[in-house]
Length: 116
Image (cartoon, rainbow, N blue to C red; front, top):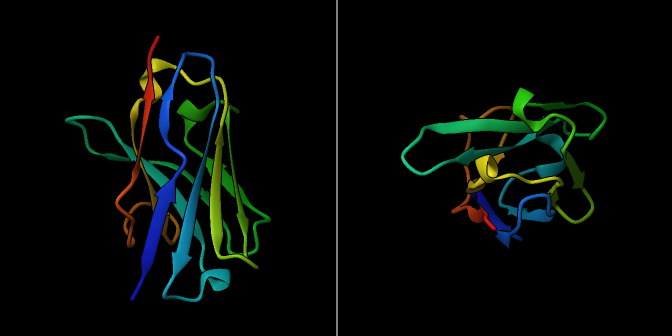
């Protein structure tokens, strides 16, 4: 079955950086577009970024503003999200999602908290 395990979250000060990872298994990762989504406390799940199966095309939500970079390693079945210049509005649970968008299978998430 599809398994997605996120890691790399934590507590960071405003302006700091975090690198999220997602280990994928149970499906043909290299043939599947992948995404990151996030959910703030009490809010709906929102799309953050997506990447095509070969990594050549990437798309980001407007709020990312060139601060985040999505990438993947198909040889290792891994998805990444490098997040720079974090601010308090980025505090959320971050999820790795199978497919393009937020409708696919996701993991349990990794918590990102931005606070001084």
